[in-house]
Image 1 (spheres, rainbow, N blue to C red):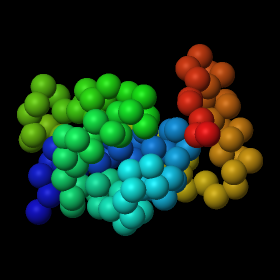
Image 2: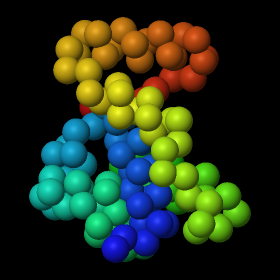
Image 3: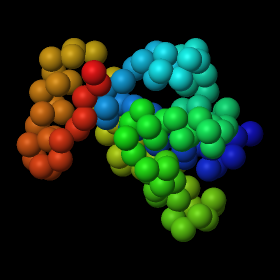
Length: 120
């Protein structure tokens, strides 16, 4: 069974990957891994090593702390199985029409005043 912290870090990976509009294959290629490995990271079945986590911080230009945000002071029992941000990211990821997806992201950027970095 996966450790709750590994599951949380995997969710955060999926969240930032989707927000930055990277596919699992894009991330895998940058890390010289298979996209299946990224899938395993994202569901928490494979633990992300510190060196790999550092590489991910470089790819997504976030601090290592990003991956641990929301752990409620380190209490493993309090790791939420469904944090709202992840639900939004999952819903956005499910949209197959790239034009619609782009318009939604633009709306979010306009409403929040926060620019979502794009791949490329």
